[in-house]
Image (cartoon, rainbow, N blue to C red):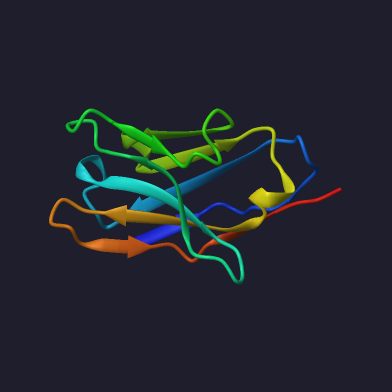
Length: 118
C-alpha cells in the first residue's frame, strides 16, 4: 500500500493551500481517510476525517480548523483533498495522510510540510 501526499509549501497568513493524498494498493472506497498534523513539541492532532461513502462520507474537523479547512474525497481517483483557507501561523506543521481500511488495517503517508509565515 502506498499513501502519497502532495507537496506542501510556504504560504502567507490568510492564504490558501490544497493538499492531496493518493492511495494505491488499498480498497480506497471502503476506507476512512484522515489528515493529521504534527508540530515539534506538540501532540499529533487529527485535522479532519472522512468516512467511506457507504458509511455516509461523514466528516469530522478539529475545532481549530473548522470553518477554514475542507476535506473531500474522490473515490474514482483514490484521492482525498484538504483545502486550507485563511491559514494562520499556528497551522504550520507537517501534515500526514492516514488511511484505515475496512479490516482496520492502517497506513501512513510520509508527510508534507506546510509553513505559514510572512
